[in-house]
Image (tube, rainbow, N blue to C red; front, top):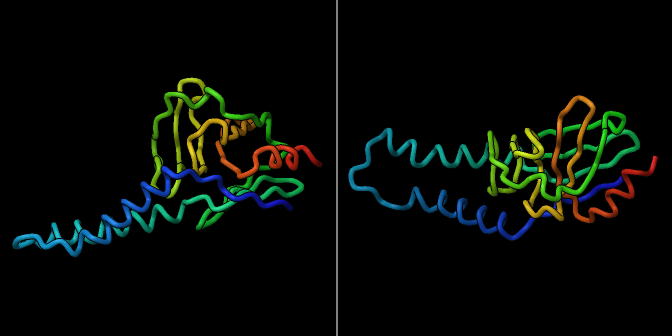
Length: 161
C-alpha cells in the first residue's frame, strides 16, 4: 500500500483563506437594523456551505494491490485497477474546462467538470496545472482527474502488480 498526498497549489490556499476569513468576519460587521431572515442567511449559510464543502476535500490517494482509493475528509472513492483503461498526464485535455457541480479553488478542485476534449469527468485535485494532473479513464466511460504529489512515483507504483 502506497499513500500519496494531494499536490495543492498556492492559489487554493489563497482562495480558501480569503473565503474563510470573509465568513468569519461577516457576522462581526454590523448591519443597520438587520432583518432576521437576512441575518440568518448572511451568518449561517456561508458557514454551512464551508462545512459541506470541506467534507468533499480530497486528502490523499492510496494505491493498493487492486485499487486506487481517493480519500476525502468524509468517505472515499475506490477505483478498481482492472477497470482502468488508461492513465495519462492531463496535457491539453482539460483546456476550456467548466464546473458543472464542483468547487473551483475553495479547498481544492473537486466535483463534476466538463471539457471539450475530455468530456465529463470527476476531479479530486489540489491544482489545475496540467503537468501535475493525471487522467484516469475507466472501461465504463467514467473519468477521474487527480493530483498526487510525486506523479512519477505514483505511476511507477500503479504499474507494479
